[in-house]
Length: 166
Ligand SMILES: Cc1cc2nc3c(=O)[nH]c(=O)nc-3n(C[C@H](O)[C@H](O)[C@H](O)COP(=O)(O)O)c2cc1C
Image 1: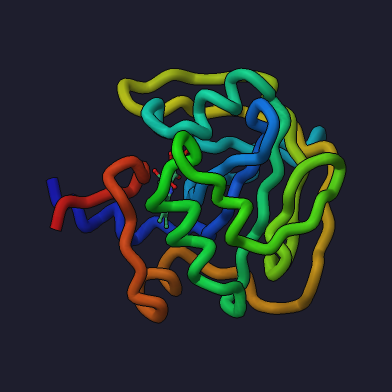
Image 2: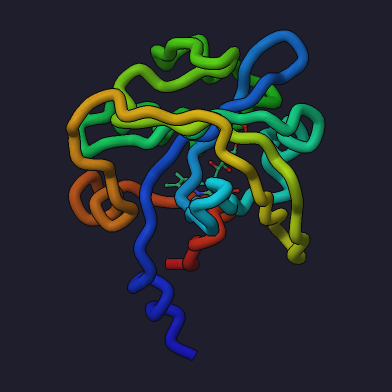
């Protein structure tokens, strides 16, 4: 099989965030898709090894910050290459609180979601979540995964579902 075929699938770039015991945590994801409009429902794939996975299993509610081409790429790296197990990512990235969850300040839109179901794979859980709230924050273009790779020249770690060994 030609593994490059997967590079022709399109995604956005998002930061999901949820409550930890006495702080907030979260990680960068590309694997979000809307699966129904009524009721509004999304799917999200999260690696079992990610600390965010542990927190989502406990807390169920999470925010999705939809990043734009103008969002600071530092957030993608901080949330995508460090673990909330030993580091408070929200101490270094600006956010505001919406519906009791953090939303990245320079995101172009956000969703507030609650997990209602889960499908297991060998490495990732696919969480199904209903969308409780959401709004547009500015008119900047949402960042695509292709823009992240081709313009920002960003990389993806092994835990990303789209990881391809170079
Ligand atoms: C561009 C990008 C996309 C990513 N997409 C996903 C994803 O869809 N699912 C996932 O589980 N991890 C994804 N990751 C990896 C996690 O963000 C990364 O493993 C993170 O360090 C986990 O942090 P945590 O241990 O605090 O949860 C992605 C990382 C990057 C940089």
